Image 1 (cartoon, rainbow, N blue to C red):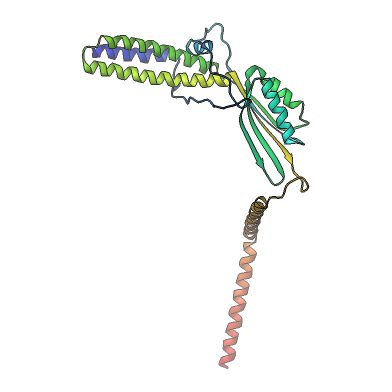
Image 2 (image 1 turned 120 degrees about the horizontal axis):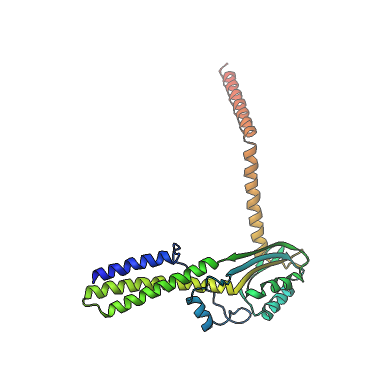
Length: 283
């Protein structure tokens, strides 16, 4: 019986190598969870999508798996109006907001949104936002091809599930406790690897199906439009004072030669005056 287990273990190694897998299966599995629209993500994957996660692609007709993401930054005259326009566009494109941050600085009010939209609507979202922007401070768009990794994981999952089925059949004919424990241990290892790989596939499928766009926009504040805030002004004053102190220290570091020279001159003058004073008292 132990010989059979050894043979199956060797078969696992051969099948794993044959399935093109030198990639570690211990991938992180994660997906954001959000609530109401436009902040809520769409429902879970359909049965067809689940089947896609488990069946390897046909090598002759490969559907490229592309993850699109980007970030843009621009100035606006009214942050609230800009947010309303963006949220409306996101709703119309069946997307959602996964993050919404507001930062209130002394000279500007800044918003940052993380938007998820269906991959085929990504360019349309970018176009809708661009129509209301005079000039972008920065604009970066990336497209990452993960087809090879996606197919590799599919093949590895299929191989390990087949081997897991063999172990399960072998478990039924086990005749001793040791044999049962050894087989169950191998089944547990395979199950852990399968779940980790499937988690990575779900993560990739989510990133492929929904593109991500980080939008940062800000409104410059003048002394007339910015509301007075004692805590904010106090914080800014402390920060400014500390920076001035540091610059003072830096300035002294540039003048250390002159400062040392002056200290030496003063010390020498003091010693000479003191020595003359002693001679005068003696005489």
